[in-house]
Length: 113
Length: 114
Image (cartoon, rainbow over all chains, first blue to last red; front, side):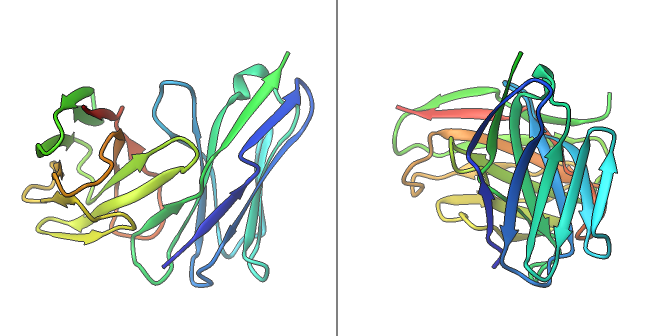
């Protein structure tokens, strides 16, 4: 089945810096890659997603890139703000197990004012 | 309000007891999921269901059971066979029986086994 590895497990940046979180997946048939943000004490919420027919997608300060050949995708956050502090999860779906969404281990992002 | 409701929010049980966590959605979503969240291990899939009366094992199904008798309900039973049941459990739903689309999560249930 699908295996998603996420790095780093913790990331600390200064406000205004950029943050990058990387994920690799194992199932070459996977075709959907979402990112979720979980603020402290809250439920995870989708912040951006990308499908396998696209190499990059942007939404204001966040962007996701996908390299299908290398089977990795990354989340980029520019001009970080303290409210970006949260746990971020990558995920992969669409492989051999139809409908199954497999998450990475999560990255705790801390943005220092 | 449309959404996913999990209950109870906190649950304490003695070792060896089965417990059932409730998950109800009024979003008319086809697919429903149960994840377990432990520090440093992300969200691990326990069971998922794409349609009523059908469900599939996830990556850590041992010691858990589910049912999907109604579209809006997907209860999870943590049995006494689950070796380490203390955890935070998240239920989620997705609109369609497809590989894409947003998961909507409930607020979670924290189970503590004493």
